[in-house]
Length: 183
Image (spheres, rainbow, N blue to C red):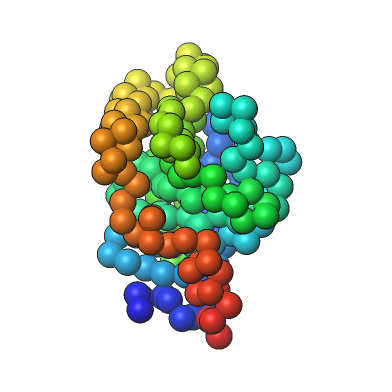
């Protein structure tokens, strides 16, 4: 059993979206394994479906298992439909998360990497990234770092070395069980 597994803690994630919006997420902390913290969102509060290549990969009420790493420029989500059907892995490229106990802060850098259950790998939202860069919401150095992160993740996914083992191991049933078993 990893640290945090078997006890119920809640984390608050302050997720800044460029240029000046912020979304606050509250999630159950289910495990801490090395530099990875696993959280669980039982029902995504999204207004509309997320569609990749014409397929719905996330919808209102979908559960997500999230993986947040210290000092990395991305997080990872195991995405599902509302009925629990696994659809793939989704990485947000973001500034390294700053941890203040149970409150975390980060900024979304507009790029995402998708690995579908069919193995297809895509870098998403390049148009949003380019618009943010053109508007001056992302400086050139941060933009270069974000693009390198997205390309590195996509390359590793195509090589079969990403996502890492803990992301594959923490399935939806395991995350649900960890939350249900916590006091």
